[in-house]
Length: 282
Length: 319
Image (cartoon, rainbow over the protein chains, first blue to last red):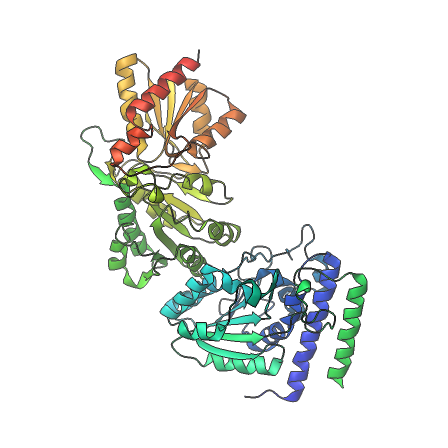
């Protein structure tokens, strides 16, 4: 069922909130990653405000869908989406990366309810998602497992062990969403270690493949809804994103992968995001 | 408490296989996952007894840990089996992050540990695994002394919450305990009384330590206390300290590198709480090689005669 224009506008406003939360958290922290969190804001808004079966007031609800963030370094986007979804106060985002915080530089399950697994070391999230999805199948549970992965972590061997295993056990309750932004710390993924043709690789591993513009909320939701219909094999949604999306001076620039904005840059980013907000309202 | 007559020879891995079947019968959430070594790790029996609780994932040891982490997160109690050299040897970072930092109830079965693997040679002889596991916070590390104790440990660990490493071996080794011998995690066992030298051993070398102690009593009149120190982490500090206080010197014995192993932990405890002379029996900063298990144990200085020599040195150092 297609979403109404009003609902899509609401979700865009949620994504805008998530981006503003990311900028505020990063500038307060004085370190962290900018490009990836910003480019995944639309997908996390879609997940937390439309797709996931979850209850922010009961993060341990056994029937919840499991959302694993494999590339833990983009965790500001998850924290921000969780805060705006009601898991914890939005002001807590300003504690990101500070001593004693629940919002560790890379997310830890034991510190923040709602985080499904500790992550940061790359290439490990899909493998754990395969375990959870297999456990759900074994017990006849109907909740789903969503895993968000980066494109560059497809250079890890363990990730492909997980791709093999997911296909072996026919995990149609598992959806891998790839942040295909083509950047990593040392440059373009295709220069550092080429990944294309990525879709063909997944097809060859017996996965159902979907592709979309990862910064188009309606397209993201449509593709994930289609992926949920897949039977007998796991699905991957290759979401093409623009690194730093929503902040003009960061967009497409890989040097923003691993650094935060300074105060002036953050103010400029927030001005842009507020202007975008007005446009959505209009 | 101990067997006193003939010693039946059975590999410790058999005890793991039997214990896992029993654990899987007691609790259907006990899961077995293997990386293409079901027969030699002795998971084969579990696979036959509990097919719905068994998963085979091929040669992918990092996946073993991560898959198990996911299953544990949804309430399963997964045992993951491969050779210790690869599990946890190949998967150390996954063990640290997914099992320990993330605190999941995953159990590693590290088979074929030690040089007693024999003819397969150095690539397959894990002699660094105790060191890399005992350094990780929250990790329970257990090295049983024979197949009966390995069976008991497997059942008990299945019912004990927490990330766990169980180490056992390939070759036949003497059964020195009985079904009635108590086994308690974190509680070292005195298998022979004596106040001249304390021999603190783990794994299949506890038997060699007992042989050495008996011979030393006859040959030199030195009475050794022999302690089966099966729980490396958390170690029974009280037993170690009182052994040092009452005997005045300690010999540690393990089928592992001297550097960083069980003996190193004993030394850490005693350096802080009751310094005494310590001699270390183990592999001295070398790799193994192909050969018969018994000749390799002798060659690398872990036979009964090497333990006797170490005990004599320790006794002399008491002054």
